[in-house]
Length: 437
Image (cartoon, rainbow, N blue to C red):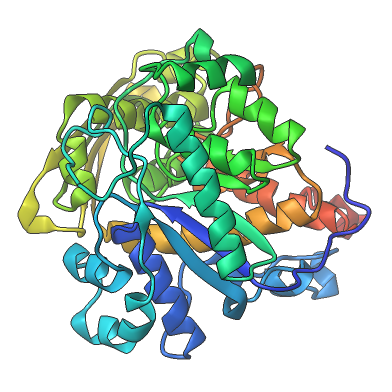
């Protein structure tokens, strides 16, 4: 990737397209509006609250990230999206039950105006959901063309100068890469023949990328993580990233596991279980969708701990992940972890983590950051996979020959160094010897 000679300024309105007007997307949109009205703080958002050190520690230069790089202003965001239910964003938010009636009341007029476009949906890929606000077409290619038409209609109607899409829809059934995913030509032919390995999320990805719209994938679905879409992203000069928002339990794993490895503490087993009762929990109650999520959640530990390098410490890990649908809990997910570690002379120890989190509250600022950073990447001329945004994902996308970085602290350094590099600032290595010369 070439260093940008110049980053285009964020002129005009930025359209934000969200496949899936559910708990995450409505919490995100409501939160942005509350912040714009001065009624809330954007807690959890690196783009809004984060600072970045420049130069030496003795220089005292730590501006806000949004002052260092030209990000779009919150006031310039315009929202839209698709859903298989006809409810407007206020009705969807009320049904999701994430935000209080008081907070929703403050943004009811705003949310009520955001009405979804019909979804490209197929129950075969999300078996626990069944909506009737869906597109009809003779094949998947026709549905994808309808999505492209939606994008252009939204662009013209709302007079936006740029667009970004962030997938906030449900987890689809587990799909392995197949030959139909290998090239753009085979993918188009597969859409025309209704190939079963082409899921609805891939239709959105194809429609967006071929329309010049950056695409971030917040679910563990393949979606943009296939050669056909990645090639199209390069051809159309479009940024893509994914996959699966890193919010609750996996966030904790990518914080704790690097600590164990840094101190050379051994790990015998890690048992993780979750209970949640929102739409996400209902969808994951289906074994096919759970398999997709399980693959995403299991990968982090192996990449962080590198058992091939430390077989005596991490060569025989028993790693289990369970997700249980429990409606009374709603969006307030509980992630419980039992961690069996061992130390000096192989003496065993245990760590227990009980994270009573709010799934959509943790995801909403991720959506905001991805929207703003993907727009920045697009204006900087970046294209294809944006590995520097791995910080936000459970299963970060990379080139096929690279292993992904899951360590949250390495991911954070990668993100901030990319921002420094973009504007010509010195990269921070944390060596520090210059202070003692």
